[in-house]
Each structure stands twice: as C-alpha cells, then as structure tokens.
Image (cartoon, rainbow over all chains, first blue to last red; front, side, top):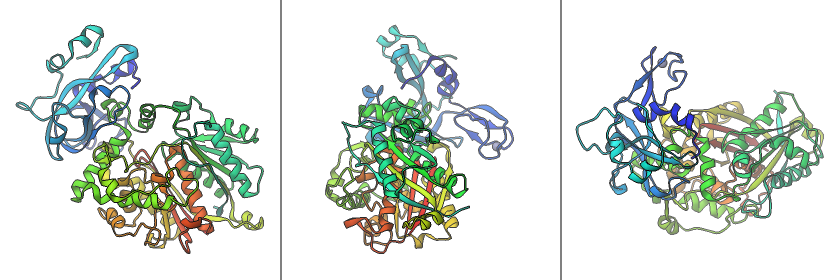
Length: 162
Length: 383
Ligand SMILES: [Zn+2]
C-alpha cells in the first residue's frame, strides 16, 4: 500500500471522522465526498459527518492478504450500510469471522489501518465492530491509543489530526 | 456508420511464460493476427493493457509494440480500462473503422502477470478500485467480488455448491482448446471441497492470473468482401461506465453498466437475448458468470445460477458460455481477456473451433467488465 504523507493528511477527515458529504440541493448523502451529486448533478456538496452506526450489507473473510496486511490475516472485510443510507467498505475488528452475518449491527471505531513502511507512518482510520456500549458518535477517541501496540507508538509518528 | 468485420485473429497460448516478456507476447499475437488477415500493415494499432507499468515497469506500449512488430511510424496507442482494457480497445477500433476514420484497425490485448509475486499482482489489480477506500482497508480484488457473492447467496437463499457448474463447464470446454491454460477437468466434488481464498470464493471459483496476448484485425465489411475474405461482422459495440466502488452503486448486484451495455448492444444489432447462440462473459469468478448471465438478459434476477445447474450454459445448452474455457480455464491475462473473447467468438462463427465447436453458431455475444462492472463493453458478432 504505497501511501504518501500528503495523501494521508488529505484523507484525515474521511478516515478519522467518517466525513462524507450531503448535497445542498437534494439532500443526498455520499461517502466518500465527491465534486458533483450523483443524483441531481448539483455541485453544492457540504461536509457531512456520519454517525458511524450501521449494519453489515455483505462481507468476506480474506485468507490471502495483499502486501502490508499479512499480519492481520485472516481478517474480515465488509460493506456496511450506514444508518444514514450510504454503503462503506471497511474492515471489521474485534469480532470472530464465524460470527459475522448480513444484517449484523456494527459501529465505527478508529484503528490502525496499515503501516506505511517507507515513510515510517502508522495510518489510522475507521473500522467497524459489533457495538459494545451505548452508540458513540464515531469520532476519534481514547480507543486510538488503547489499541495501539506500544512498540509501534515509540517508533513512528502517528497520523492523527483532530 | 460503416458495417465492420473482423478478418484476422491471433493469440498466444495463455499461461506462465517465464521465457517471454510483455512486448514479446504482444508482437507474436499482432503478427499472427495480421498473417491471418493476409495483411502486412494497418492504419492504426490499439493496445489493450492494464498492468504494464506496475508489473513489467513498462508503459508507452503503443509505440513500443508497433515498432517491435515492424510497424514503426504507425499511429499506435494504449487503452486502459482495468480488466476491460482489451474490450475497450476493440470498441475504439470499431468506432474508428465504422466512423470512416481508418480502413484497417489492429487491436492487441496483452498482459504479463507472472513475473511478480501474487501480492504484487493483487496490489496492481486493486488499482481498478477506489484505493483510498478499498485497498487501504485490506480489501482485495478477490474479496471485493466475494462480497457480491455473499450478498447474492443471502438474497437468493443459495449455497456455494450451487455455483459448481460454472468452473466445471469452463474446464470441460477448454479441454480441446490448445491456447487454454487449464485443460484439466474438475469435478463438482472438488469444487465443493476447494480451499477458501476470500469467503465465499474458493480456489476453483477464480480465473487464474496469466500471461497472454490476443489480436484482431478490423476492416469495413465491404472491403472484406472485396478481398474475398470470410469476415465476421460486428453488429454492435457498446461501452457504459458506472461508479468505481461497489458501495457507490445503488444496487451492487444489478451490475447496471453491464446491463445497460447489453441492452444497447441488442438495440444496435436489432436482436434479443434469444437470438444469441453463444456468449463469452466476464467469468473471472463464478458469481460474475451468474450476474452477467442476468445482466445480459439470459436469466431473470437471481436465476443465473440455475442456468448452470440446468445445463443451459453447456455446449449443447440454450446459451453456451466459456465455449473455449472462458476466463476460468483459458486463463485471465486481464487486459488481454476482452480480445481473447473476440478471437474465440470469431473461431466459433468461422466454424473453426474444433472439438469445442458450437454447432450452427451464427451469432455470438462478448461482454468484458472492468472493476466489477465499473466499465462494461458488449460486442455482438455474426457470420
Ligand atoms: Zn443532489
């Protein structure tokens, strides 16, 4: 996963706050944001922060991972239908592959996505897990630090910008 | 618009060509196509290729292949549309000849995938999607399609074993194709026991990544007749696009672009699905065979799998598919596959498919997808 510093910085709101957009003309919601509304072609899209709650629309457990994800395999990826409507592709976490099913309720949580070895970066972003407490607003929280392996924290800067 | 025909085809064997590079394969197919057409030149060369830069460290394939094929000076360019690159290159060539811009157009699709480790190839294939939102999440090329299959199983109350006939049929049809990568037979039992790669997709669901190149030569039908050649007419050529990401489509299982490109092709040809004698579909995975049967109007929604189970897709069935092995058994050199489809339909419509011949085949359809249907190209051919 070759990812450059500036690119990761550009994506921080989408990754960490699940920020998409809402069309000012017709109200349509999209994730990720885009320049033109796919429903009415209005160019007036405004940032919209999704709640982070949703349910599994489909999923797959990956046994043959791509470079950079070997340490996680097998892991489960999913298409999550957000409570507000759009689908988002994301890895599931804190869940047994065998217990995942279509329609399962999930919530966003911030986790390490991958390590950008060349730049020494740990890239963080959204994953989804079964809800473990009262629904959260999905924003970056102490979760980030609680689930970071200590040795990595010491080695590299963490790309978390609030 | 002028009526257009294919008068020449060429192809390399699909497989692991350790001894051959990207350009070498492309030149072999290009020259074979020209020889078959009885020509030593063309007005333009379109190269369909997806991963030359990533996997072979080589871009700028138009000029390179034209020069190496002894065609230095010829207008030449590369067309890229992920795994639909070959089909889109053919579409471009069709438009150039039909529109009267050129009289002879050469198309070569080429892909060289076995020089690199599977992880690198996987990473290259993921470039067809939305990298920041898919590859960044650890989603793979296979798991993307696996999520389509999982959803399909759920919506239509099916199980993995119901898909067995797609790979079984493909391997059966490849047995007599000397250009195919896998000519061995597989059983339904082997399919049911195959190892999971990205659930619910197993090892026998997916087409093998491979090296290969295929070429076709297009001329106006009038010119083919004047040359005394038996041309295969292109009755329709359509290209439709969709959102790159499955999650940005209203209904991922609908493959809206595939559906629209098929509908427009039927309209252009003045035909209906019932008029098609054989189809080469984008069967890179079993689920895509089922979904494209539906998108092309051969089955109602959720019924694509039943065509496999009922034997309708077999050589003697109502709508034979993968007649020379398809992606699954001929092999999937991604940017070349769309051109292999055209070559194989020409073989069938010439009555030159040997033991794989579909008797009395007169009309064939080819559909090539890029990125699970973000690009969809459909062609209809007739002898
Ligand atoms: Zn709108």
